[in-house]
Image 1: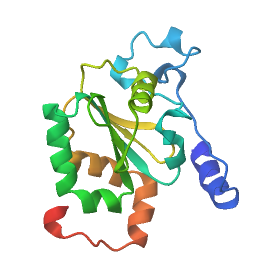
Image 2 (image 1 turned 180 degrees about the vertical axis):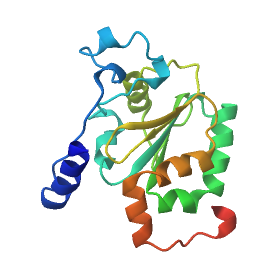
Image 3 (image 1 turned 60 degrees about the vertical axis):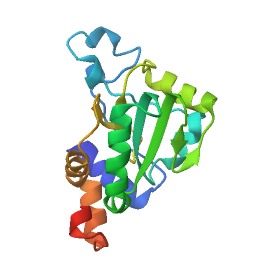
Image 4 (image 1 turned 90 degrees about the vertical axis):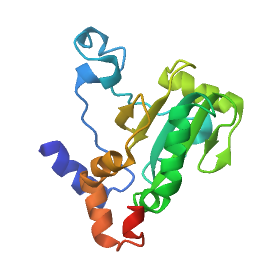
Length: 184
């Protein structure tokens, strides 16, 4: 509770400072390696966002990122997710979600901007994903991993996860929805 209170107070009085508490056994660092034996690999949290790869750090504290990794741009899970993203674009926008697609073969984009094969490769390497697998990652405004899926994610479940966090509740209370009910 102390960390939570401190983070709220410092956010108000020191907006350029962030407070985070990480459980050593669930973060993927050299220090935590001895404690990771009983933690499933897909549950380990990555705490460092890449500073150069597609400049993901530029989005920190402004946007949430839904990063989609696929073997190629025509991957079935990627295609299904892209269709869902198109249908839910307003709801994603209300939640400050930016989409990134990192294909091992074919087009890669971040926030509707093409990115180079090299940048896509660097991001894939950072998150240690094999070129042959589909993975969807939700990255919070704080830069931390919030959700990981190895199949096309259910966007309604992603929205429920986001909406259950304290920051989005405050954001949504301040903004009235502009999305139609069918789009939510």
